[in-house]
Structures are given as structure tokens and as C-alpha cells.
Length: 484
Image 1 (spheres, rainbow, N blue to C red):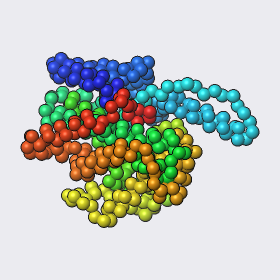
Image 2: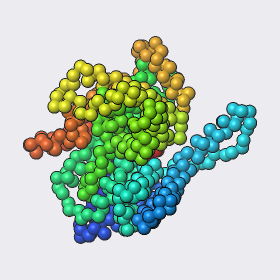
Image 3: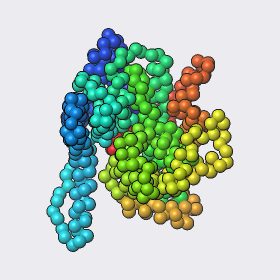
Image 4: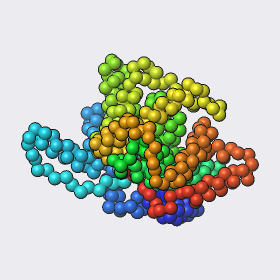
């Protein structure tokens, strides 16, 4: 079920009414309703894959209970590895089986030998990478005794399958989200209204910014051999705003929706395109995944401690694994490696934590130094997104070589210039709102602090009017990160 669909527009109010008025504020009934609603939400896409969520929930719930009663270090480690192998085994089969088979065949053909191994027609379950990492965090935290395992399978299932963030995050830690299912929840009007405001902003990002940019980005990338470098650079820019509007838009809707039910989800984006270096960008982009890899992979490997070689090794491991997490394609691995290369100079000069504050905090205009740093970081990011968006390495290098050729200075001679100009105008409007609200949790949050009610409602009406007039009017388009 898509957030930007009529189905969800009907589903959400029904669940909301049942949750607050049909459960009589009974905590067990509310949690059970969340589980049932979440399974309906996910099963709307394909009910068969509900069994994967159920298996993952049963495995990690059982492992958690077993760890509680097990004090032998070897057996505790064995239980943890049982969770890791089963969860990553399921993820690996559905997401990476064909990738390894095809590369295995190519490796043998390189040495002049052919092997007959067939790939499979595997459907990738929506959101499998997200809920797999969420359940894994539970096993890790219980193993490290940071969390007492729950004895309620309903509570645990609600944590794993919580529908607002089930298919595209944020990837919640068990230490943060699971305890919220134990506490009695009271409806809070202020939090609910802020949640609706954030959902509205998320829908604007998705329907107006992301979907319009997607139409243009697809046009350029899918027909890249027909366009000069100037047009392809424009296409890369459109994809840059497409993926941000799409993914951060989903996160805004998820966080706002969770707030309607009395839950607090972690912030997943913090205005990443206003970053002054790549380290700051990764502290602000897909925060739930970046911090997951930091805590469960980077730090266990030694983090920034140890020799220079270890620091470099750990940096490349975390970025390449992050790239591979996104998809079974060399383009994603290259994207991850490229970001590691970007990050390396900051690590070697120990300047990766220089920009921890908000850019131009308390100011309307950034300093010249900050502006140049932000522009340079944005340029590096746009370049890296070309690999992320391309279907193959051949396509990525074809686009980059054209952008780096003299044709980048030519007139792109675009057919639908009126529509392109409109989308650029919408992007500029979007950036202005984001910049003005950069000190909040999301771009539109400042409207909630406007004193006069009529001004707030005028702002909402303007945003709704823009969504109506300039939103993508075709069928509801899936969110980009559903494929991951």
C-alpha cells in the first residue's frame, strides 16, 4: 500500500479511529491492532511475503528469549549467529542470488570455462532490507545486554512490522522503538497536528518534487545516447532532487504518521544538501542506516581507532557495504566506493567532524566560505548519484564521459522547455522552504510556530493547492527505496 494512494487515504483514518476509539485505550488491543493493520498494509502489495516477516519475527523473538536465559558465552554467540545467518540468508537469497550467480558465471568465462548455472526469476519483497536490519538490531542489543528481551510476541511483532516505517524506514533500533509499545499512550493533539503537518510536507516532496523530477530524470537517463552533456547534467540534477524528495518525503510521512498513534520515530534526514563536506552529508542523509552501520559494523571493526591502514580499511568497508545494501549491482558498489574516496581526505586530515553545527545558524544567508563548501559538496554528490541511478557501469561511464566533454557547454535544445522550467521553479521554491526551516526537524515545521492561526492555514492551503495543480497526476508512483 502506497502512502500516496487512495487506498492509504482510506486505510489510515479507519485504523486511527479503531486505535483511539475502538480499543478503549487498552494497550494490548492497540498493539494487536497495529500488528493486524501492519500485516494488511504490507499484504496489500503481496500477501505471500507476509510469511517472511513472520519468520523473521519468530526467529529473533525466540533468540531473544533464549539469550535471556543463556549465560554460556559460546552458546550466546551461537544464538546470535543463528539470527544473523537466518536473517541475512533470507535477504541474500531474495536480493543477491542472481547477482552472485551472474558474476560467478562471468568469472569462469573470463578463464575460458563456461558453467551452466541458471538465474532465478525472483521477486524482491518490498522493504526486506529495512525490516531485516531492524530485527537484527534487536538481536545485537539483547546479546550485548543493552536491552531486556520482550516476552510478548505481539509487542515484538508490532515493533518489527509497524506499518508507517515498515517498507522504507527509518530503520528503528529496538532500544528506541520497542519500549514505546510497553507504555500506555494518550492522544496528544499538538503532536498529532505536527504529525499531519509533516505528512503534508512529505507528500509535497514526493508528489510535486520527486515525481516531476523522476519523469524528467527518466527521460534523460533512459535515452542518454541522444543527449549532449548539458542535458545529461540537467538529468543528473533532476535525479538528485528526485531521490531526496522521494526518500525524505517517505520518511516525513512515516514519522508524521507514527506521531498520530503516539510514537516517536528517529529523524532520518536533516537537510543533507546543505552540507559543507561529505562527512556532514552522511550525518544528515539516511541517518538511520548510517548510524546502524556505524554502531554494528564500523565500531566493531575498530572504527577510527588503530593504525592508518585500519582507518582506511574500515572506511571503505562501511561505504562499500552501504552501497551493496542498496542493490545487487556494481553501480551501487561503485557509488559506495566513490563516497569512501570522498570521505578519505577528511579522515586523513582529521577534519571529518569540523561541521557539526547547522550551516548559517540564525542567519538567512550563509558566509561565502560556507556557500562554496556547500556547492562543492553538492557537486560531488550529484556526480556520485549518476552511478546510483544508472542501470549499468557502461551507462554510467557513457553519461559521465558526455558530461565531461565540450557538449556540456552547448545548448541542450530540450523539447519540453516549459515543463522543465516549471519543475526548476518548484525545486527553487522547495529549497527556499527547506533553507528557511533548516533548524527544525523538517522543512515545514516552522509553520507550526506561526502565531496567527489564519497564517498557518493559509500556508497549508497554498501547499495543498500546489500539490493539486503541479503534483504528478498519473497513477501513484512507488517510492524509490521500495526496491531496496
